[in-house]
Image 1 (cartoon, rainbow, N blue to C red):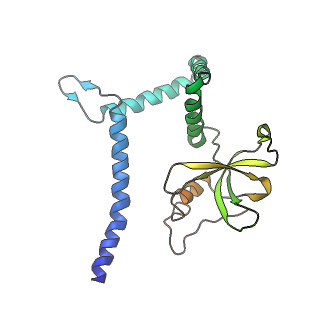
Image 2: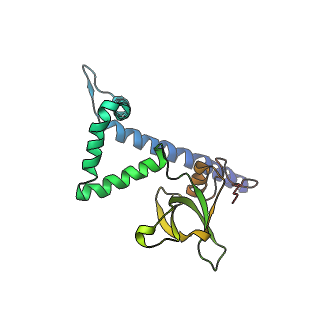
Image 3: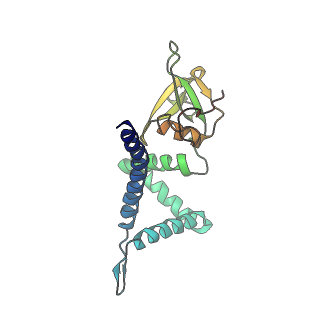
Length: 200
């Protein structure tokens, strides 16, 4: 019976991550594919055509953004979006978040370890997002983004500089480590003999 239970658990360990990954990829594919339902003459709507067309359109927009002649027009659009009262909040937040992960100047590129309070040895892992908070009257504080485990959300906290220790690790490895709840380390599966090398 113990052996059967072990086989069952091993099956779950393999199937659950695989099934969830396939399901998430499928949902993303269907969602993007439904953005553009382009019917093919004589055939109708073919699954995947909308997905491919969406990717092509995104690439073309990227090409236009890189083009000197159209850059001014897109810059004007960006300026308008950031001046509209309610739209500004949403647009700026999403833009900054995307740039943090995908932009040329990635903001989540400085991994740190933060002491949560002076009276404890408990630490949190995160990324410095702002070096100066003078505008808020917090000259000796810096902003640190702390991603949440098993989630793509996080919290922005401010700490005294002396409580923040820079880490000599790869940013993507640290993000993987945090999001996985510490199970994955440096892109490898966790467990015995697996650890993330942290150096101050």
